[in-house]
Length: 72
Image 1 (cartoon, rainbow, N blue to C red):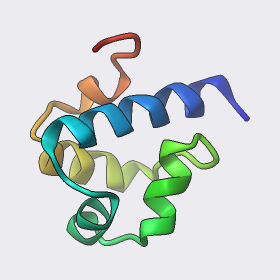
Image 2 (image 1 turned 60 degrees about the horizontal axis):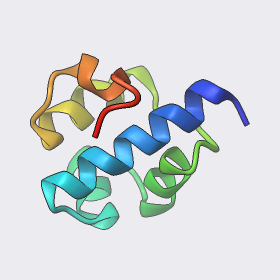
Image 3 (image 1 turned 180 degrees about the vertical axis):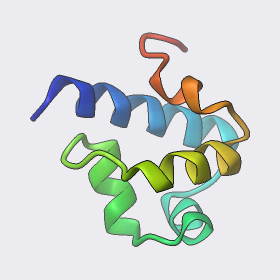
Image 4 (image 1 turned 180 degrees about the horizontal axis):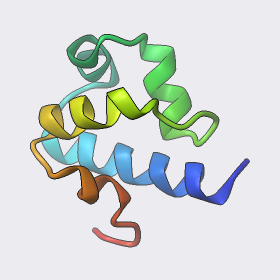
């Protein structure tokens, strides 16, 4: 598993939990499956570029915040 994917996944999970939304709610909001969100959070797959803006919008953070590892 790539280090960047793992770091991104951990950060995504932190931001999602901080926002108080479930994986299912996040998946519905950006148009992917719950399995896709789970895979992203576990570092198995990274997000597609077109999903980055959607993730940031739903989580109410700038896109760069998705890559600010080591926070929280």
